[in-house]
Length: 316
Image (cartoon, rainbow, N blue to C red; front, side, top):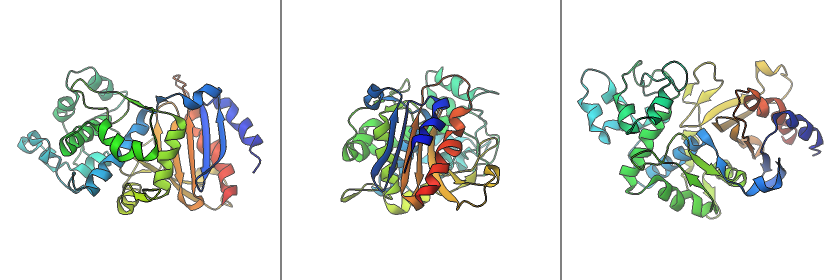
């Protein structure tokens, strides 16, 4: 395939990188500068999808109980809160952002920045009141991701980063990374991981292969499938649906104004500023986009659907 037009399409976005692989082979690889290929950079909320994988692995190993387990098993104070429905919050609610906590990530209450300015992030999240019954509504919440990270520490008896090294990074050959921590030393569950673009692609390939890497099943096929299925409709103005810390969507749809193209279902990790991992199972394709723009630009949100996806349908 001739990707020269794609290069022109991507130019306005000024991406750090764009990588496309099909059936495990890289078919397009572009970096703004050559050295950026080997530079670890923040993947922001793509960290959440790594966390999802770690939760699945912990469940597979019997270290973490079933997703329907109440979070109060790990945080007894939730069970003691008889004045609300906090005791009903489950691991599944945390994974699907449906815990019901009264939380606005940015804007409104600025819950996320307020959390990061406290001396105990986990306690800050647990202290938030509920605005909805658990399981009824999605509300994007990096605080819930921090609870999951703290739960993993309890369940595995090691740091989240060490568990990631043993269960994902070392098998995939991911050697370069950094990962931020909260004041208690718990690695950040909703953001803060830095990886190279090629290692983001490896992680996407692991999910394309339904959790299998080489001769090893790192994540059970069952949990890969369950965690990447739509669990609840995404809160407006976000599009698509949400799984276990994965977004799910379809291309094209009515907003793309082209009903003649066979639709492609995909799931993806998305981080602020345009850090993305897209997995398209039907065409056996993984796409990684990274950016370093910190301005309030909407371009990164549209790069995949407006510039990349039209080329991918030709791979079908």
